[in-house]
Image (cartoon, rainbow, N blue to C red; front, top):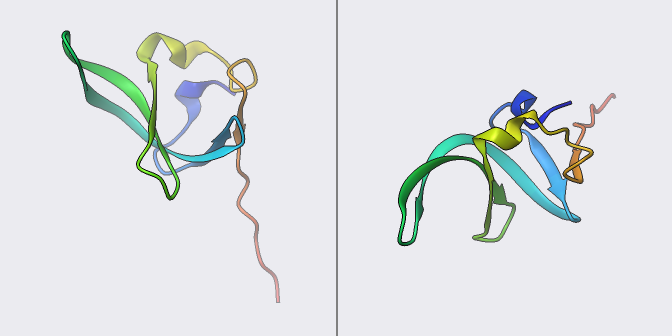
Length: 75
């Protein structure tokens, strides 16, 4: 699976830290301006991880990103 295949709202782990994929957003970069990036927000912490649009072709495995599977509860 590629990074570009992720849907906004999906949960992933990157380096054992839980993140939520927010999609492509404009990000302010100091001394450069704004750029569109793929944005991940850490769960419970005000921390973000950004990937360039070109990185969308990379696989989750190559970037050490693990998709968190939703567990389905049965009665």
